[in-house]
Amino acid sequence: MKIAIYPGSFDPITNGHIDIIKRATKLFDKVIVVLAKNSAKKYRFSLEDRKEMVETSLKGFENVEVDVCDGLTVEFAKSKGAVAMIRGLRVVSDFEYEWSLTAANQFINSDIETVFLMAHRDLTFLSSSTIDELIKGGIDVSSLVPDIVIEKYRDKK
Ligand code: ADP
Image (cartoon, rainbow, N blue to C red):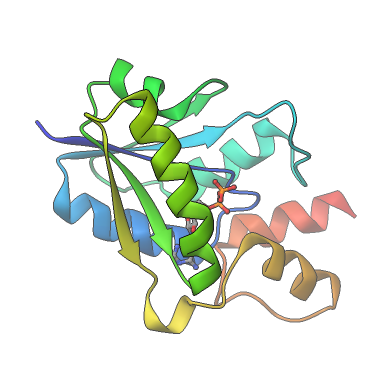
């Protein structure tokens, strides 16, 4: 069984992430969506909220699991028997960041491949921070995020 992990902050999850997850499930037998818990990073939402948003959005998805990792993602991948880590690429600036991340991960464990999926053509502009700005600006983002994300923002007010 080929397992891949899809690590990220998901702060909050967007339809861009969900598109990558759907496509990854066609390539792998199981995809584990892994929420990063990085104590040095400041998140908009608590881990519990980020996880709840991911789990609710992925309800009914077959072969998808949700987990949390507070250490090195490559080592987490290995512990789960995963052969690959999925990442999404939107714009050239993503490439620069992802390239150094992949190089560091190769240094740690070159057996875990990083697999890149290009963003859906309609979702290349979509990031968690864009969503945050749009919502704060009063823009309707219901076509860009699952309902649970809009609800969580409403609760936060
Ligand atoms: P991180 O903090 O690890 O970058 P994110 O939650 O921002 O976590 O993103 C996780 C992964 O999903 C990254 O590889 C990112 O490039 C990718 N991603 C984010 N938004 C999109 C999108 N709209 N389309 C495709 N990939 C995306």
